[in-house]
Each structure stands twice: as structure tokens, then as C-alpha cells.
Length: 304
Image (cartoon, rainbow, N blue to C red; front, side, top):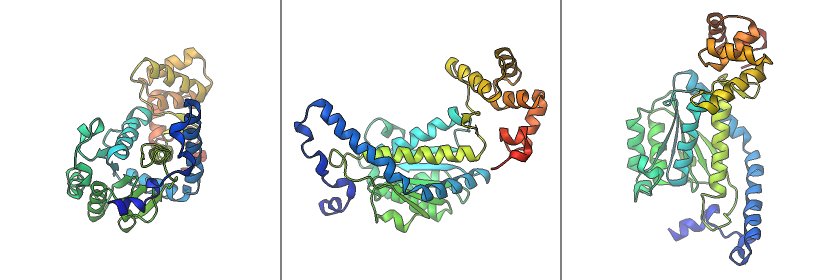
């Protein structure tokens, strides 16, 4: 194992932080922040691969498939975090984007000994979720070689799914399995091997791009407004009405009335106001446009 770790970028000594334990607090924080600054630039070179992954995810969704994130430890938790935010943010069914972690739900909070070292558990999770040719599976592992993730990717590939590998090292075992690789190599950590730091941040940024870009391509964003959010509490009701107002420039009285008539469905309220139609017609226009607000109010402007 020591020889294996020696080969990984994420396990190298960071020369810039070798004296971090001798510094005052503010200097420690500055050093960590400086390391974090390197992440976005590193990911900038990967936009073609990330965009390709997004296009495959969109194809999965449009064909009735799903997106699965599969990881262990921090990587698994980040996948679950991204997946769990999709329903309230974009109004998706919870089954559309799912996060799986080695060791199951208990591993979100507590380490489950040995779970990440078991390829069979990864394969078993793919079987239990009935992975198939319509699905996209994203295996996430900083090292690119976590057995649970490798097992899941192998089985997903056998079952016909489109498989993406997301890791933080070059030339990992993922390459021999994945249809597409995203190697988010951001250099050694500020603290040797603590991949919850730069590696984890890079993973989160990639997952943000994958899910958000896919949802934009599905029509769940109008301009840069999240028009499919679910107003499930007071704050979100306020946000929903604010979004309607920003999209339509209507008066508060008009916004409140459209929101009420649309039963809190933001897209419908926006189309009602912009197209000057009732709820039923707004629904038909959205259905005809595939859920795109822009296409509903002006079919000629549809771009996706």
C-alpha cells in the first residue's frame, strides 16, 4: 500500500505548506485559501470532458434514465449532497438523481469499516438499483482506485449504463472501465492525504456543473432563474414569488394572484403573466415546449 500511495498526486507532500504547523492562525488560513485558488483553474482545462458528461446525462434523463453518483467517504457524501439538492432546487423526482455511498446510509455520518474496500458491495448496489442502459453512473474517488467504486463502475458497465469516472489523479484503474474520464488533478493537499480538502472541493465543483448544466438543458432554468424550485417553506415561497417578479416585471398584486392560480408552480405563473393566458393554456404551452419557459412564450426562441 505504501508504494501505491507514493504514486498518487493526492498523497504527495505539498512543499508550500510544509511549515504550516508553525504559523499563526491567519497565515494557516491564507495558505489553505491559496491552495483552494488553484482548483478552478485546474478544472477550467476539463470543461470539454465535463460538457460531454452533461450531454450524456441529459440523454439519460430524456430517455427515462437516471443519474447515479457512487463513492466512498467524502466522495460518497458529496454525491449524496448534490443528489439531495436536486428535488428542492429543480423540482425533480428524488429517483432521478441518486447518491450511493459505500456502507449505506449509516456511512453518511459514521465510517463503516471495510465497506470501501469491497468491490462486491459496489456491484451489489448497482444490481439493487436496477441499473440499465438508460442510466448514467458517475464513480467518484479521489484516488481513482477505491474498490467499492471500481466494483460499481464495472457492474454498471456490464449492465449497459454510461459510466463516468471522476477522480483526482492521473492514470488510475478507472480509465479501463469508464466511457469518459474527468481527472480533476489539483495537486497535493495542504495536509498530506486529506482529500476532503482540495480533492473534495474539486469534486463538488464538478458535481455542481454536471447537475446544474443538465437541469438547464432540461428547461429548469429561465435566464438564470431556477423556475422549477419547490416552495416548501416560507423562505422558498418568498423566493418563488420573487423569481416570478424578476421574470415578468409584474406588480406584486399580479404576482400573488398568478402564484395562487398556478398553485405555486413558478413556471406556470410566469407563462400566465408573460403570455397573457390562463393556467390551463399556460400548462399546454409548457407541455408543447418540453417544459421550457422561453419556448412556451415564444416558440421561435427555443434553443435547447
